[in-house]
Image (tube, rainbow, N blue to C red; front, side, top):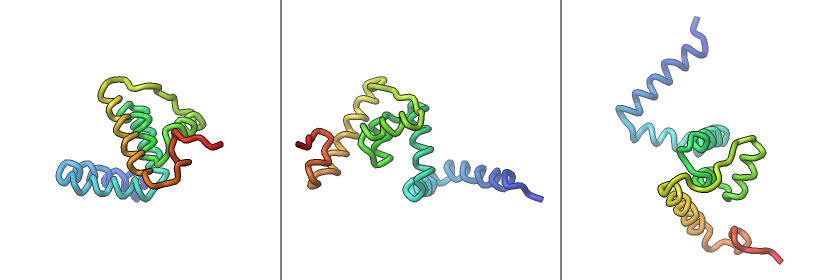
Length: 119
């Protein structure tokens, strides 16, 4: 009798092989999974943030949140925050994330801008 772990074992092995043999197909599968499953998206993004693979700005971008909201949510979840870029590459990544956010928000109401104030 096969256990669930045994079945998942060979599937995971095949996914690792697929990553080596057909990286484009694996990238598409991961992209689709991240887009369709919020729980997996959050787990992967938070894990990458904790492993210092991405910045808070990039995490916010991938989660569809503002950086301020992602900070709040991470604090609620007990995820330790890394404040400020660790190096020049991370600083550039944060700047790029802000540029993407502003480019995506062009044409929307000014209240969605992180710099706007409501009076």
